[in-house]
Image (cartoon, rainbow, N blue to C red; front, top):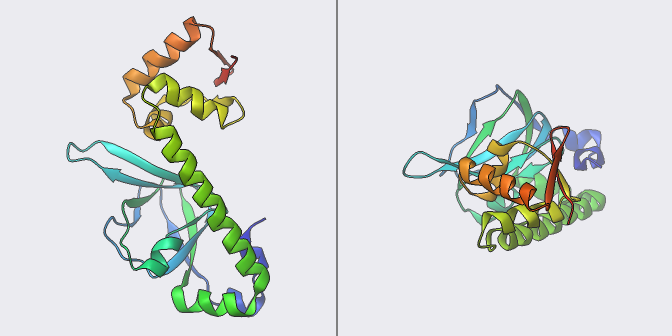
Length: 192
């Protein structure tokens, strides 16, 4: 369910729409947003960059995902750039308007809290993933949490697992030789 489907016509007037071209930065690290953002279409990523210029992927967001919701109410700044991975449309609602919607639309509030709960669980899983000491352990854990199957995209996967692409490629090859993984039709499967 898309949370915005729970808004009535009057509440929809609070939405502002932003069209972002592929590769454009929508919000910059350090910005202090006072809006909640909803991905309407396309894909956006939140990335930070190391002092060496290496990209550190924080999150990939797709249609129906929400971002900056915790920052809106905390006054904290953004910890990465929000960049369109393809042409995207993002809607936003400012802080005072969303509070007004919360007070009059209990179904929206309930779904919003559900989304926050799911994000908290997701962050706990991310911490657990990053606590794994080796790339192989991270990859196996990631596969276990994604129905034992993922699309093979070493670049994206290396950003998710926070490891260098060449090291991840070697780990995939090693786990295939050990009979733990197989590759088929551009997917990686965990078989053990």
